[in-house]
Image (cartoon, rainbow, N blue to C red; front, side, top):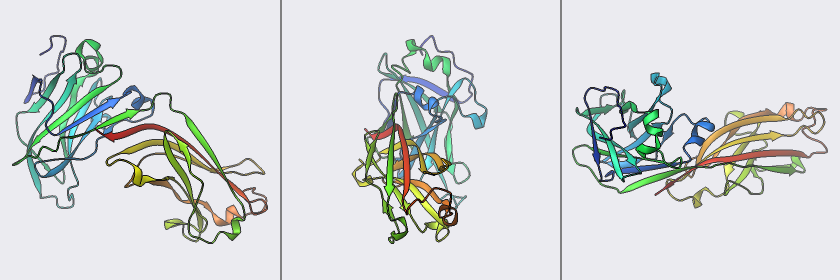
Length: 313
């Protein structure tokens, strides 16, 4: 064990060093400091398969606040895609979690001595205090180099499968906000259910605004619905997802009291859009003197900032 590391006492935890990489999954996180800067308290990896079940890793770079963890990083293994409504099912597994020492190419390995049961009331097991922040960030230990770290996992059920998969999370340094303004003429003559803006770029991704003039979902017939969407989600590589902050506005051209919504979201091929089914009531939109509709024309504005991209290794 590296002499500069001083671990907290954690009964039942085996720690070792190995030069063998994780069998089942690897997560490389670049520009780690930007996760905190952009209010990402945790990162959930994509799913991987081992022993006939699907799993994912969950990493807290500043500790799991829900467990009152301070001055440590937290790392967990979570069973994914399970039918959690059946609380009596269970999967027994032994697992090992890895952290790469980039100075030596070796891995620090944490393993509990006892087998754990993953079930509907307990989907995750792992380490609240995986490593002290001081040890994690100390450059001589090699765990965080050039703002990059590498984690991994091995999971052994009754029969494991080596899928040889992994992913990379790249946080965007000095992320740039891109704005797009959409002028809509003859608003009252819009008859189709959904209208798309022209595509525009932000963070090397193509986006579009989706507007439902008569509403969608819970806003049907009473509201205008407004969404930001990936323009071509099918073109994303499998397992890719994009973390973005965005704002949508309908401009009030008379009073400058714009109707406004702001959110952040992981966009992917499975979840390509995010917005508001009840963005503004149709009665308020059409109210005289409000300035949203002038001469049957309105302006919709989008601001999009891409902060992170996860891709398969």
